[in-house]
Amino acid sequence: MRFFDTLEWILGSIGAYKGRSFLTGLGITIGIATVILLTSMGGGVHRFIVQQFTQFGTHLIAITPGKTQTFGLSGALISTVRPLTTEDARALRHLPQVEGIVPMVMGNVEIKGGGHTRRTTLFGVGPDLPRVWKIPIASGRFLPPGNRPLVALGATVRKELFGNQSVLGKRLRIAGEGYRIVGVLSHKGKMLGFDMDDAVYVPVARALDLFDREGLMEIDILYSSAADSGRLADRIRKLLRLRHGREDFTLITQDQMLETLGSVLDVLTLAVAALGAISLVVGEIGILTIQTVAISERRSEIGLLRALGASRRQIITLFLGEAILLASLGGLGGLVLGSAGTWLIAYLFPELPAHLQWNYVMAAIGVAVVIGLSAGAVPAWRAAKMDPIIALRRE
Image 1 (spheres, rainbow, N blue to C red):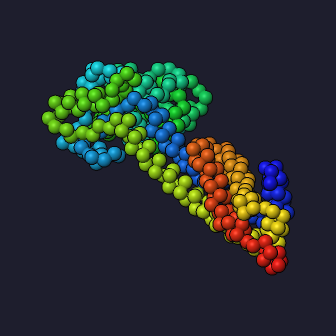
Image 2: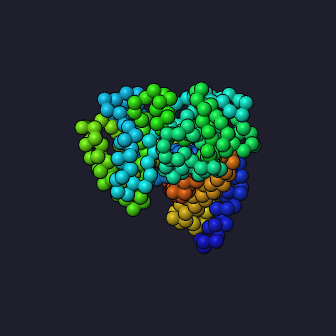
Image 3: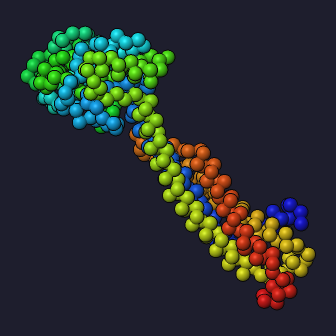
């Protein structure tokens, strides 16, 4: 039997049993679409979380007070034997390949300005913040060095208090104290739950006095892209040990954080893909069942083919090809459906964009073909073993 004759017979068989063929392909379609959607959503979560951790740049080292062996906020953010100080920050600023440093303390305060009162987050920071945290200045300038009562506003605070008015040089009261507005920051968005736009920024020394704190919550260091983060981290540890007498601080490089985060998210994506694969297994069972039933119903057809001289190998090729084609068509349908669903999710939830994971997509298509091969093999072999006389007599 020639190739085109074989293909014509397979297509004719699929067309002759439209309902059965549709149900067979539907199981694979749903399975492939499920894998694509779940892995795409997992990819979207991966990109979203990584973006949250890297929106301040990728060459950062964070130092928090208190020694801890795990990532996260140290319990010593409230108190520690030797707090991190602004003097520590100034000493770290002079290390080679350090391009900027932000000593930071934060809290919630009441502010008054433009005839309005609002509670918001206050960040006590240093003058390097726009460069280290990558928040451009929209108008005016950022806080200069020193401890003068000056304030820069986040985009949301500026809009809520003053609308579209020019705010440069105007007065703002923070916890009852007067400050002069020197600048407005560009829109930045949220970072790990903190709205960077709904905030005000003042010199760190004034924030320490305002919150009656001895030490900083964190010191963020921006280093040169040519620097080795591991070697720089060792220099930082050495310097702070000399100043504190022991290692009573936690140092986290962004490389370490992203590596750990990437490992966790890769496992999450793999687990999601495994859940989607369950649908493919269901689809395989469907093909196996339907093809097995089809063999029983098409005995006369098999008997006629054998009587006309078709070999067992040709019978296997016909029925196996039918199963593979159905699985492939189902896989193609799943690709279209899954891609459309991914686009729709990305459109409806732009903050958590679904992202096609092409490695999983191609793997799912390959699995669909393998499913057709494996699920069609047993029924095809049973069809090939039929005695043509018995098959025709039973019919």
